[in-house]
Image (cartoon, rainbow, N blue to C red):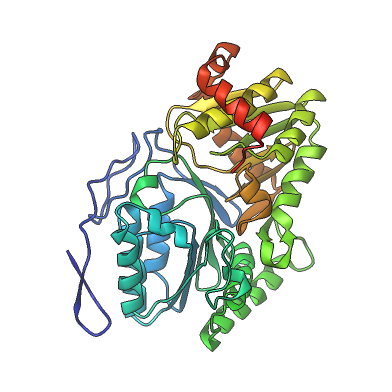
Length: 412
């Protein structure tokens, strides 16, 4: 398969792999199919100005949004490559640039770890040849410099898409083949809520050393005017929160801590990683004071198997304090928290890297419809999961993990 570059030349790319759709998913109507997890198909849940997607619908929604862009597209991803679902998104970005849309991307150097590594270099080559302005983070822990601005010195763990200043996506999903079958979630926002993320991403692009064009400024200004007309003096129903370590700003971390500490009735959290002792202690304190604490973790690891045992070691400690710990059959990559009447969907893991080191972003809301939608999604995953009992913690892997965690202070 070939894609036509900006000068009319052909840029070779790999053919996308056969798709594996979620059970019950409607068939593709345009020949472009996306791969998702084995979890039952779930149509997006819609609320005022937003939709909550799982991995079964988010890639297609992002693809369609980029294909409909008229002026500006901005994306930022920890993991993106020209393979799997990412191949279709790469196609859409290249096509948008070729038809005159201003397209810019911030991507993390960690994407080079996608297999094969040429899929990331192919993403860079194809998008840059089409005229996409791409910034790559430094992303090597302990090594700074490389003539990059401070905003590109930390790992970017963000997952963001903004189209024309008012249509946006944020959540936990990466876009490359290895993660296509992971359980995940993204929030799609339009109008005033999408405009919030557009403003945030404009500031992020400027801090990353990007050139802000009149077209982009106009798109964001229009979004702000629309938000002012829609909201007036009312607070926005959705709030964009982020961690920017170079600016020592940790809104997302602070929000998690506040939700955990103030929870009175329920505290439900899903994350692929549970390793940060400071956050886990706060969760344990909530369980000890009688809060309904439920933790959803993956039954397999996207990195390597021992991380599952680290999750279980911390899960055992939380279970002893009264928490319920669940493992899903598939790899769950979704990051969400519900505490009483508040919910957050984000890129934030319960890890030291998310708490204090990486660029992170998410959306917070006390809107009843959003809280109910996130709660139902977590309940569905609990219903498909195995609740861990003491026998599940009594094995050598967990014993080794306890040694790493308790005596060596292991975290990630």
